[in-house]
Length: 288
Image 1 (cartoon, rainbow, N blue to C red):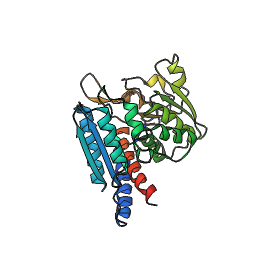
Image 2 (cartoon, rainbow, N blue to C red):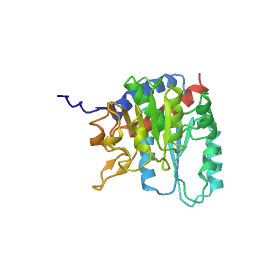
Image 3 (cartoon, one colour):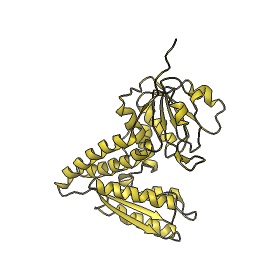
Image 4 (cartoon, helix red, strand yellow):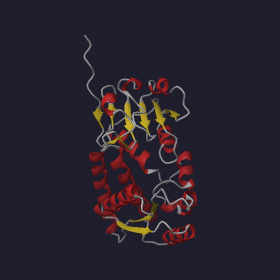
């Protein structure tokens, strides 16, 4: 009789984050001995409650790692021109190495104008067209933090992507598209699926690695996963009981997969960690 396979190993984003953050802290100390403190400016426009939590966590993570952080809060009525002028001033501030404008911005402000106003040298979110182009062409630049964190998670389990079939569910500029390009850089064959994909299950069953990033509960269930596959869950949703959950049916899929990330405690902590890494690297690049 066949023995049932053991449940998937959990890739612990909290533990990996702590390890990476302690490396960041020691590299920050090395810069400080040369009189340089990496600085991040976080700009929040409006009163979005989720955004307020995110920026608070980002600022705290910076301070814990020894970086210098400024949080600038503005009323939702701030004009686009005033915000762009503030970004221009931060671009020219030598104490600031990274600039992050928390999205979403109020409806009267064009988010693309805001992202493109940030200097590519300070684009620690990795959203600028120049950063996207650098990723696509394999040039040095800043990688968006969430997919970058996913790559670090794969690295942490010593997973060799060469020749593997990786599948990304979601095509956003923030996660899906850059994720696919990063997997491609590591020599995986990559499939991108999205809301118009007609045969999702047929495709996911072929995949060695699945990244679910659509913001929709149970988009990936146990019957859609090849035994032993690696499943990274980028989703952040709430279940009927109001508890945080991802895009993946965790309890079901962990019985089939080889590795899986939980929600919370998986990709989430890695996103902020990679923001610290990008800010540190921004400072290191101009102070080699």
